[in-house]
Image (tube, rainbow, N blue to C red; front, side, top):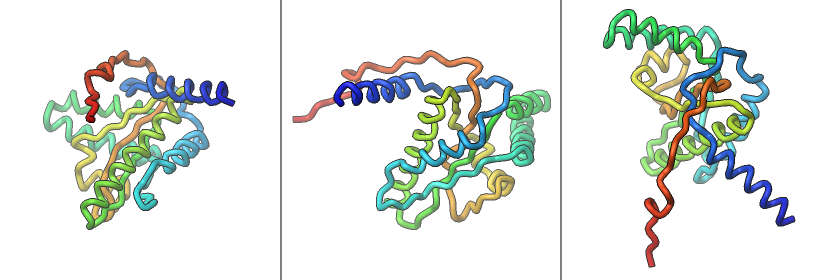
Amino acid sequence: MDEQIDQHSDVVAEVIRSRRTIHNFREEPVPSREEILTAIDLARWAPNHHLTEPWRFYLLGDETVEAVSRFNAEIYAERRGEQAGEAKYERWRRIPGWIVVTCRRSDDEVRHLEDYAACCCAIHNLQLYLWSRGIGVKWTTGPVTGTDRFFDLVGIDRAGERLVGLVWYGFAADVPVTRRAPVKEILEVRP
């Protein structure tokens, strides 16, 4: 039994260590809807205080992706010019899969912070599961996601929900190499 536990632990450790934010996706069909629904199912098992289950997931289809990509291009073009806006639009339209994750708002500040943290854990669960299946993810935010128009385009009640992230997914075109500081540099032991 101990050997089996060790093998499972090794698999989990390898998924955690190897997962990377994917910036470039291959242009091929996204994983099946069933695979994504499984990832969302596992995401909701994240720890959350008082079992509030504050997360909401929005799986975006082509029409919504088109509208959000066009809107983002407009924002980008205002800052960097028309050509840059069009390039941004083309890049966003090539992203294979889109999920928006929100957190239900609470008037209680402590609960709202706990719920937001739980939603972050849910996104991480989603990322780890998808990574274990060979599917890359980028969790992002940015100027477009902070606007009322974004919420309108996606059909989210901004008064009732707060954006946690726009999650892109697909097969990785490349996997970045990163490094983490050794534990001894980030850990302090208190007596």
